[in-house]
Image (cartoon, rainbow, N blue to C red):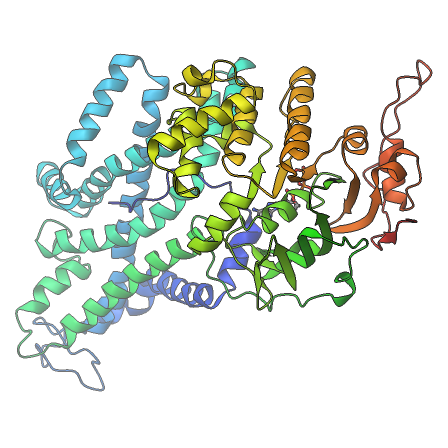
Length: 603
Ligand SMILES: Nc1ncnc2c1ncn2[C@@H]1O[C@H](COP(=O)(O)OP(=O)(O)OP(=O)(O)O)[C@@H](O)[C@H]1O
């Protein structure tokens, strides 16, 4: 019964995000509908129960009037009063059935993880069979077995919902169980049950809650349907289903009772669905549709770069990256301007979170919604990527083709950059097929040539291997081989050596240097390693809090001529081998605030 959701659990939402979602127009409508439904469910029998019980024998099956807005039933009872006081039974049945469905479903879904293998297999088999039946049919069969009445209908609907929740829990749980933090807990010796309750359940909680609230609406309709068929509430008690059944006899004479009941059922069902929709937005399970405040305007003072290059391969002016945060925008990259000359090697340094990766991804047109990338200009190798202040993503084929051949990107983590299910050689050759217009055989030959060029030993044989059969350094070099399938004018390397050991680091850096010298490819190198950047690059951009605060030559940096206090603190924090034994390493304290005003270098 629950609708499917993404099999990747979102991160647990905070109470704040739920309130933010409920403050949107849709959230306000949902809150009002929920309050109304809760009011009728709690106070309905108290306020209208007495009136509903009065039988006016002078007005049997009467049409709507000022006294009886929806008319009366065959026994002379006021239909509107009955409808309002029956809200409680209908809503409570739906909620209890959902609770049963979720509890039994979650327990069954998690059981295979802790139970012996034979039991897990049996549970999975039974779940598979029950899922093959429509849930409503299953509920009818179970309620016939349990006997007629409100309680048996509630249990029947709950049990019929359970298999779908069990499968959902299994799917979500297995995606979480494969994550590193669960492996870490296992290594620490945490027991299976504790892993389930402490690590798995909290991470699958949000999608389960969303599905439960949507399913409550379905349960309400199912309970009404079973009562309509005579399996649910029995006389003298009544719920919406039983009332609907009785109202149908006189529908051609007086349609008002049936229409009123249908409206009540639709209202309650839609309210539960809206609640699910709002929770889903609050938990970030689908893209936000909230109305955001105006996108922040351009800051003209950031347009002028700190250093201008005569023949830039990349010219960036006032680049801003914004991300939705609540109902407003956060701007992790705030007006960045810089040039990279042809054949130049430019380093980007800065604290974690200063916006280095976002800047690189933005100029490579790799960022997508909900992130917004704006700039007055991003000019790369003869092509302007900023149109009307917006930097395009790679949706245009000609742009994707241009960037695919002229700009290469080497990511930080070589293990996640390659498709684990496709041979390495095929992945490298694909670039030639897609962007180089090569035939399959030529693309394959060129891929092997490029793998040789990045010094993958026995490249022809290894091209038929999967990425997991490669070492970290080989995977990183494979990424470079992909970039070298054409002759890129710029190679962006985002911390290309962070995940590698020092020997492999040196190999990768010398390969980058060779690519620069042989092909004249400009390099934009993001790194935390000031020593590496000042020895390898010609110029260094220092980023702090989403802006470039200093742009200086590598010699100036190495000679200790940096002027910005943040750059100086970064340089001072580099450990020196000649330091006195026992001397404490200099670090940048977390609470230190540096000026965000940029400084101009002396050259
Ligand atoms: N996809 C995203 N959506 C929303 N915010 C993001 C996204 N990616 C990064 N951020 C935020 O933008 C800021 C800058 O991130 P970025 O990855 O550019 O930092 P960085 O300088 O490269 O850090 P590190 O050196 O740790 O890789 C951070 O606060 C980060 O939380």
